[in-house]
Image (cartoon, rainbow, N blue to C red; front, side):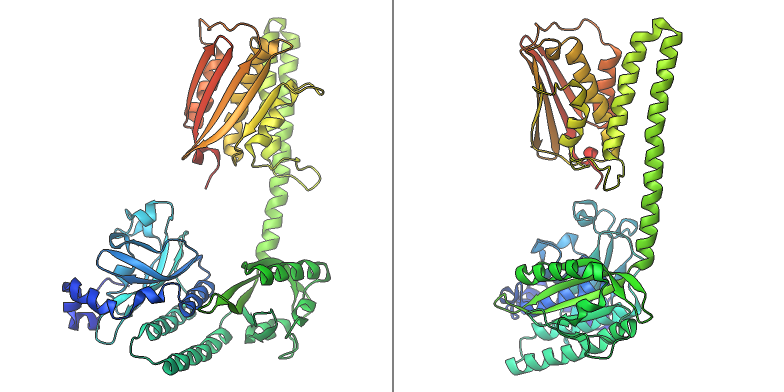
Length: 507
């Protein structure tokens, strides 16, 4: 798709060159009254489902901003015009597709690409009035690059864009609007019957009254035989209660419906299927329809299970490697008695790494830790077990919890192992009354972890930097990209560690 202007725009260049006149023309539509319009919301919901995209928008591009009359998948109601993809789309004579915005010189430095939204894929159909007035675009957006839309999806977006223009028209009577909606419904049914996915819809109470041709082709059931609640009988017996419960929860709350289940194919085989549905609302905010799809994911599900088995086996072998390394250290210490103290420290560090790995590694249902495997507090609890008396804990962790992953678990384990070991040898934990308090809190885009020792022996400032201190510095600064402030106060060591949130867990 090129960035050349449409014939309509070429014949009406005044609209582009006179923003005041264009703004006045746009104002005639009374767009404020169309914000979050139910009919437009149904269109963006359907556009997102049709294109399997997380975001769909009806965007009106004005002089200094673009306004979202309807939005699915985002909270923002407007953005500056200079960041607008739709400003590019609306001057074309057909759909604009951007497979990967980071590779497109028009958008690579766009704040919507480089910022939190992280746009990668964009497809937009221009909304242009008969006299050439460019209004904006109907678009779908994804945060992952894509090769492009299918021919059917492009056709569907064009049909839906025509419906948007019909809804925006200021010279249509209520009767004409209803006729346009009926016509849209008819086109929807034609479009749905040509889709490769199974498509269905229900009344507000959940009564299934429509399935497309693909559903009946896949299941081999007679037309109408799965209406009402009979659809649940098509699922594997072990999945029926679960699917029914999830569907009832969506009906009760209006929350999007999503579930994986095994659906019986016409040949009797049960195939893993992803079911999704969104509610559609009228002007008063009442649900008037549910629109859903069923997608065969059987091959992907089996491949995922195979990858999980491999991950479990690999993780188990890595755990065994830690045990072998500890054993080799013990053997070396026995053969070289002078190596004993160093070997003991090294073995404890390896053991701490093993604990961290065992906490975040893939587990079976039986071996999974009681704490969430992405929990910082859970990891600390595992690491501090060797230092905690059974009857009276001496290390206390409190404050905001943070999500972590396997990448950050290793430096965190080394960091807190060194702090705890030093506390046992020289600090608060070296006396019976001493305790350690670990407080975690959020500070904007950073996590702040504070280590406070108290009620221990008098603190003396170390005169030289040992390997353990260097290891702490390496873990925090080089591996986690954070900062560390250590203060040897008379009442106990205080350590403040600041770590950027992205360093704790990958996006």
